[in-house]
Amino acid sequence: MSAHSHPTTDLGVLRSALRGEVHGPDDPGYAGAARAWNLAVEQRPALVVVAEDVADVATTVAYARGAGLRVAPQSTGRCAGPLGGLSRTVLLRMGALRSIDVDPVARRVRVGAGARWDEVVFCCEGVGLTPLAGTSPAAGVAEALGGGIGWLARLHGLACNSITGVELVTADGTVRWVDAHHEPDLFWAVRGGGGNFGVVTAIELALFRAPEIYAGVLRWPGERAAEVLGAWREWVRTVPDEVTSIARLLQPPVEAGGAGSAPPRGPGLVAVEIACVGDEASGRALVQPLRDLMPEHDTLEITGPMGLLRLHGDPIDPTPCVVEHALLGELTSAGLDALLAVAGPGSGSPQASVELRHLGGALAQEPAGAGALAAVDAGFLCATAGIPTTADDRRRLAAHAAVVLHALAPWTPGRTSLDFAERATDTRTAFPAETHRRLRRIRAQVDPTGLFHPNHPIDPAV
Image 1 (cartoon, helix red, strand yellow):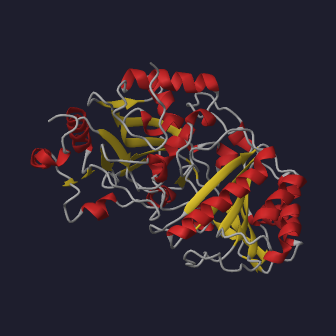
Image 2 (cartoon, rainbow, N blue to C red; image 1 turned 90 degrees about the horizontal axis):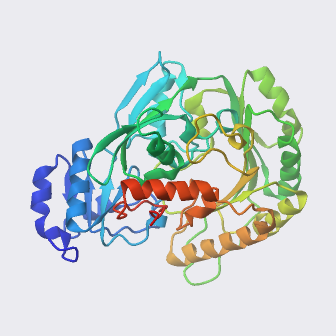
Image 3 (cartoon, rainbow, N blue to C red; image 1 turned 180 degrees about the vertical axis):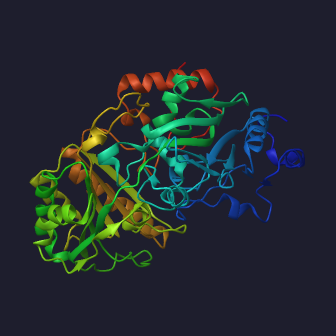
């Protein structure tokens, strides 16, 4: 078959070679199989393969290579926005690869690339251990390949650097196991470089003793946003690495507004989500300066890793969303004022959530044996999230997010977090220059023709 012929002409051959399903554009199951987690993103790939095992993945890679197509792996379908057009791409769904094998003695867990954090945390918590999970229970563990900033990150660092081994299928169809002793350059690259180097089919992660955690949410009326966020900004300067918090400006989702202007917005809420590793007495003492502000809502209590996954309140099911982010070198009083002017009460912000994540701690330190993404050179991360119901809503939310990023520009270090990048992003902004050059050289070695279509591509060095 030529590179320009329609790939569905010989789908019978592919179907007969796979345990999993194949959906062409004219098949009744195509739309459901191609659906992204973000329902605001429409995916129209050349075809969809739902892999059942590693052999299906290798067969699909070989088929795509021979058909002149590319391969875009997806575990949960999250972060689909950056992929762009998929007309010459096989969308390879990995959700069926969900095995979880916990080794409590070695403190390791090996998981299939389709496993979600809630599934893995549940299995590990039963033996008193935990991985460095993200803040969304529905996120795929494979997303850790791009970084991973969770509730324990200030204490233990990026999730990608807790990865101890990776199984992947490279462009030549080879199934490889890479770790610190087997193909260490490729192992370095996948920890931060994500899906640029092959289709990851399994990941092995280091586990940590599941700690006692004092965690919950404090909420106040939105009119107090300046007071609360100002106090939070001062508070985070004093907390140890055992404390992670996220301050948020919250609004009800924007309503369908058609082509007209957005509906008036009320003051909403201001909230601080907090996780303190340690006992209740220690946690209470640490949180007291914020409690002194007399929140109207207070849910702080002792919990465990599964409780942490529910703390941020991310949607479990697919939903439409428009997300933007910026890394901030520091959060000055002027920067906070600039944010409140465009996203605080009275600003008319259409965003359902505007959050400030406190970074630093272990996130700022490069651990021994780190991967390509060794640390995060920023003190805070700001993320906006809106829930659109119409195309006009999507445009309005994107336009307002751009206003927020522009307002914060004086405090951004020029870096991005690919974890939070929901649109096409120049990957050079995520890595130091020499790191990016090394990633390009490694991709040229394992995928010289660019067979793989990752959400954040690193072009092979020529």
